Length: 282
Ligand SMILES: Nc1ncnc2c1ncn2[C@@H]1O[C@H](COP(=O)(O)OP(=O)(O)OP(=O)(O)O)[C@@H](O)[C@H]1O
Image (cartoon, rainbow, N blue to C red; front, side):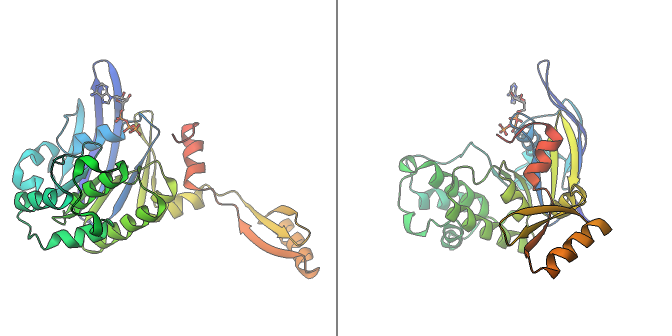
């Protein structure tokens, strides 16, 4: 499988403060990779190193097989898209004119503008001036800008943090479309449902290194306990083991026609996060 990102023993110090200690992971071509961790755990720092906005103190960060700083080269830079809190938009221009400007920079036909505006649910607002936009609209314009040139690799730092659920879903569809067309996506989010929905694999970052990595479904399975919860017709629930003992109980409930539903007790990604980090998402 082609590796788009390879990070080996990455470390970053800001003065004497350690932001990253020993971070290693790989991202395969075409996957959506979720980079999860508590506030201040180093997610944005990692994105900045991977996009040549910061240099590491130690370790290696390869993008497209080359050291990440090669992305300073404009030809390489065109292969990526970045969404961070720094919007890079021209405040006095309209949404449409901002995108038109970027079409020029990326050598993209302006016919693509309507398509990306549709992907971010802004088709009817294209004449609005950027300085007058709400935070959520601004976030969507930034996404539209990153979608314009169909990048090979897209970095999304909390892409839906300012969006309502309807617009978030719109964006998810847009991301799926990009993924279907071969874009690799590196995503940070505090929204575990979003991570579960979008990501092929997630990594949990804590204390400066990766604590756990894998597909959400597999991680949840591996953290599941050996029990089932049975909901009964009298409104109560019973937690039973998956073994013989539980089977006998379940058989009894079923033969007495008392079972409403049976659930496995798999943790959510949020539960796993709390277990790994010993703290809640913020
Ligand atoms: N330019 C900087 N100078 C000094 N310290 C910094 C700088 N940028 C980040 N840090 C520190 O590095 C650590 C990691 O920050 P980073 O922004 O990467 O975290 P994060 O995981 O993206 O957090 P959040 O989820 O809140 O966005 C923090 O302790 C932060 O204070």
